[in-house]
Each structure stands twice: as C-alpha cells, then as structure tokens.
Image 1 (cartoon, helix red, strand yellow):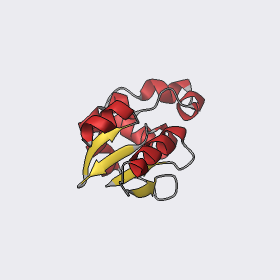
Image 2 (cartoon, helix red, strand yellow):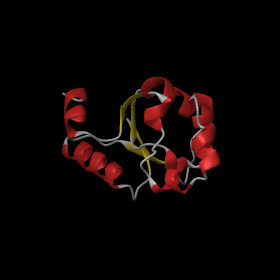
Image 3 (cartoon, helix red, strand yellow):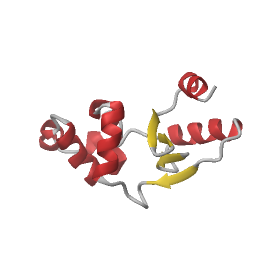
Length: 115
C-alpha cells in the first residue's frame, strides 16, 4: 500500500492515523518532494475522474490566475496544471497493488474498503 500526499495536509494526517489505527503500515510518497508523473496522474484521473482529482477548494487552486483556471476543461489540461502545481491534487490517494483505490479521506469509505 502506498499513500500519496503531502505530510502537513490534515486530510492526509487523518488517513494515515486511521490506517495506522487499523494495523496498516503504508509507504508514504510525498509528492511535494518526490513529485508525481503524468502517467500516474492519468491513472488516477481514470480511476476517480479528473474533476475529483483537481482540488478546487484549496488555496493552490484559488491562487492560480483566472486564465489558468479557465484553461482546465478536460483530463489533459487538468493533468498539465496538476503537474506544475502538485498541491492542487486532491489528497491523499491510496494505492493497493499499484491500483488507485481511495481518494481523500472518509472513515466510512476506508472502513468499507478495508473490511
């Protein structure tokens, strides 16, 4: 299991705490330090939809110029923005056996997935 995210993100912290409390020991991939590839973003967008992958509620998105925000009209343009502004990626992303299975954190979703 790999959890992708940013260590100071509260949602990532909640997910990691929940996983640890349920005896999971995931590898953590800090995409601020280690980055994320276009291929990985494409895989996640296929699994969750590019609209869900793009964190439009976060400060990174809100700080982008209106021109950049308006340029995001499909998966490819969303990936281009997320590659340059990886804090605009919704997080965490949990992969099991190299497959994306969970996006963000909901105790009910985690409970249901890992029952």
